[in-house]
Length: 91
Image 1: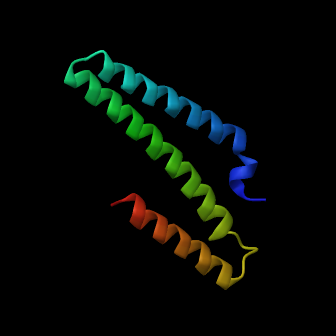
Image 2: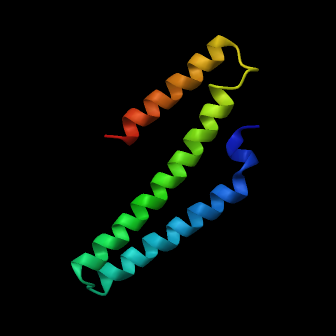
């Protein structure tokens, strides 16, 4: 069982809060809110997604790279996973 399954409820709660923020952004755009307000909503969504990403990365590193129970091949695979994901995420 992966670490996301262990933290499923907490992660899903974060995703639900992000969904609420995105819906607030959508409403702001539909209502024609001031660009400053819209930018603030966008920044909040981005921050929430970055926080979620950081939490999952941290757990991945602990479980799939830094765990003393892992063989070197498993550690390398976990590190490669993170490197590929970060390349995509940071584009």
